[in-house]
Structure formats: structure tokens, C-alpha cells
Image 1 (tube, rainbow, N blue to C red):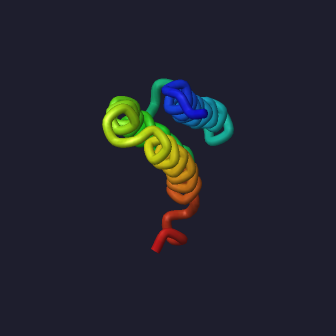
Image 2: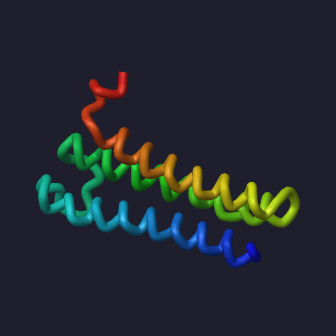
Length: 104
């Protein structure tokens, strides 16, 4: 049986996803020689940093909208859409960090 704890779990997973991207950005600062607090440097690091920032920006909209949807429109579809969001953000980050020539 689904409860309102299920969308909370989806939101926690979304936050963890953004945190993992943040850890990757921090780890790759050293790998690519981008000293803090610089926001520019190696192109691969810049793409990873941008993917992280974009995911963080989207999270601000995702959290209240997921709760509003699940409460007002449907718990099951809200959870399903939340999971789709999580997978889509992973695919986005992986695709964005790859060489831009491959995105055409």
C-alpha cells in the first residue's frame, strides 16, 4: 500500500542524486586541476559542474511540484513520474558531461 512516504522517498533519492553529483564535482576539481573557488577550468569539469548546478536548480521546482501532484492528482502516477524524473536526470547528467560533439 502506497502512502505519502513513497513520494518522500522519491524526493530523498532526488536529493541524494544531486549530492552525488556534488561529490563528483568536488572530486574532479583535483583530477582536472580546477582550484576552489574557480568555476572555470577543464571543459569536462565545467560540463560536470553545470550538470550539477542544473540538477540543483531543477530540484527546487521538483520537490513542491511532486508533493502537489501526488496530493491533488494521484499518488501512484506522482510516484511513477518522480521515478521517471530521477532516471531522466541521470541520463541528462551522463549525456551532458560526455563530449559535446556526441550530443548532435
